[in-house]
Image 1 (tube, rainbow, N blue to C red):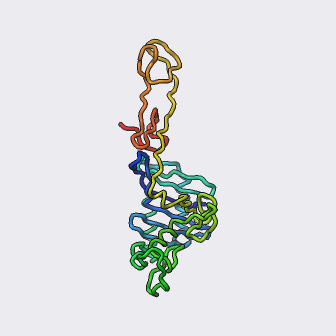
Image 2 (image 1 turned 30 degrees about the vertical axis):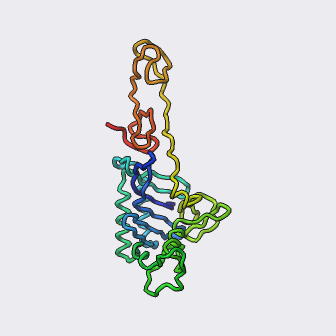
Image 3 (image 1 turned 90 degrees about the horizontal axis):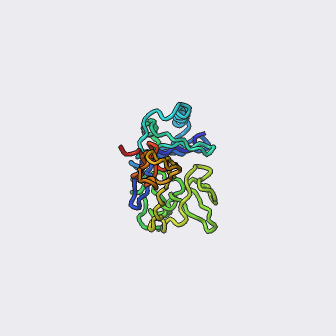
Length: 265
C-alpha cells in the first residue's frame, strides 16, 4: 500500500552538501483519503476516496512496470514510500506531472485551499488568543485551532517535541517515538526546531571510495592502491572522478552513488 509520494529538486547549499526541496507531497491515510500539497503554490488539497483511489491504482501500475522509463536528472527526485518501508525511486517517470493533474482534479472538485488566504485570516501576534473564528473564515489546517496566531500555526505544522523526547503530529497522533508518524507518515521535527534553524548542521565529510588494486602496465608493479605507480610513476589507467555536488571522490560509475549526480562530460 502506498502511504507517501514526494517529488522535488535537489539543490546544493552553502555548506557544501545538498538539500531537497519538495514540490509535491501526497500523504495517504489508512481510511483511503489523502492530503496533497503543492509547495510552489502553497496550496493544499483534501482528497476523498473517489479522487484518490483511481490515482493510486494508476501509480500502482507504474510501480509494476520496468523502471526507469526515462532518463533521470541528478537535480530531481521522485519517491514512493509503501507500507512495508520500501522507498521506490521514480526518477525518469512522469510522476510529477501526474501529481499536478491530481491537483487540477481536486481544484475542479472544490477540494483545495490556499495557505496564503489562511494566513490573511490569522492573528499576526505570536500566541495571542483569538476568542472565536469568524463564520466566514476558511477551514484551518490539521492541528491548528482558532486560538493560535501565526507562530502557533507554524509550530503545529512542524510538530513539537515533548519533554520525554516524543512528539505530537499535526494529524492528531501524540507521544510518537518513531522518526515518522504511524498515522500519516509525516517526519518527526528536529530535537530543537529553533536551534536547528539558527545553527545549520556541520557539512558531511565527502565520501571516499577505495581504488581497485591495479597492475602497472609499464613496470609490472602489482596491487597498486594509489592513482600512480609507486615504482615508476605511471598513472592509473582507470579514470576516477569527483562528484561536483556532494564531493564524493574516486568514482568510476556514470552516476554518483551518494546523490545521483551525473558524471561530468
